[in-house]
Length: 593
Image 1 (cartoon, rainbow, N blue to C red):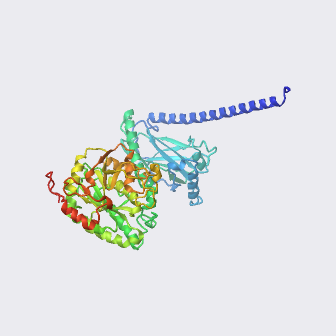
Image 2 (cartoon, rainbow, N blue to C red):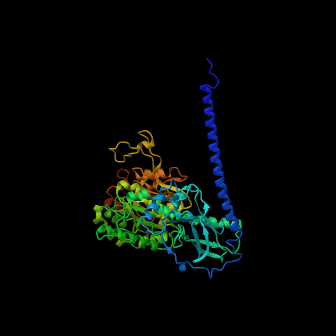
Image 3 (tube, rainbow, N blue to C red):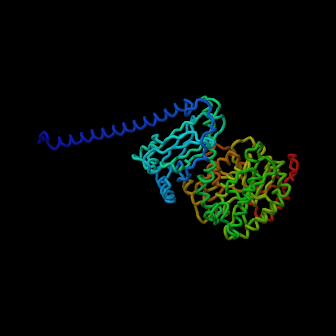
């Protein structure tokens, strides 16, 4: 039976139509509001650019700052407002609100909460935002150049940032009128300091904005487009350097450093004391930390390197060769991995192939080969070993010490840190890791490195591809064996861990990405995984894994596979050294002392 006109079906249809129409009207209203807001912001920016093109704030020629009010003569009390950075205005503004509430509670009752940030100077115009929290009228902004007041403006330009609206107490918060664009006068050519302050409504207080002071360079005439682009590019590069340094110290390494590094308890990485230069106790542990800090800074001064916080005994170079930013690189920085219980091994190496005494300096200056024993920090229970090591360092000065808890299960972490620290403190063509239980023929190693010096990206050593051991009872068990496929699979091609090296570009890659490089249980597998996806030349040098160097004058490194090094190294390394002398070689090289 058909429904009558005006029945239930007709009501449903009219209701659906009304909903669609209402939704369309709401969408249209929203789009119109956004277009109006965008238009207002665009008009404000165009107005600012026109002001900049017109030559600044009413000064037709170069302005003289003499006679203008000075910042030092300003009678207003300066208060320190809440610290706001660019990250504070991201996401939902909770960080801004937290900072505001925390700092507001510390202010005197009669002190206002003054906020703001300088975005920068573009085409002679200072841009930013400022407000007095909770005050309705736009706040006044004072701009000083080289300590002289050049103009006072009102922060009333729409910003379109709801987080700024929230902390400033604007309504509606999504469209705060708290921005400012203050054209600078035409200044004398050269670099000037610009400082910006926000004033309270009562005229009694002022607070310097975040990002102030900042540097501004005035040119003799209007910049051509190409010159302006070059200037901006230079500014961006300078800012990127600062950002990279901050990220290097606080960012990408934070998780790794907090787990294994840092002046502190040796395990958590927490700092002891209240500040970097204070808070050290009198116990042996904190004395060691203070000494390590001193060694780091002193070594950095002598070697021309940055005291970047993860080298506790830096390298003192014998010449300008190898200093970062210098004109000459060393051939190789060779780190011999060692531990706190290996003093006897180190003495055997110094008596055989590892250069010691005057030969250490001669090897660096005449052959470009920098040798150092690489070691970290002891666990809490090994303070006696640490004191013994400090005496050994003072006697031989042939260590490169990392701020790393030195245990075998953290060898992959130590390897990351070794390459990262080495490439940032010494400028060389190659960086090598060598175990302290093998025999090395230095002249043949030098010959190999020189022959590959023009190779830009290289990963070299004695290559292998063994089975992935999934059985936890086996010595070289890989807990993450499933990453390599089904049980019984083989590893990708990689260098054996006794001796291997990389070129500078690869070491720099490890440094740049150290925070996200995966660490497998076996350190040599870890390194192989880092370079596997790179456009790198693999050099399988079989002379770096000789089982017996007698009768083979081209052998570079000698060790036994069954012992993962020289079997009974304290006894056999001197025997191998006498059987396979460093020099002379059949190739006619002069002796290396």
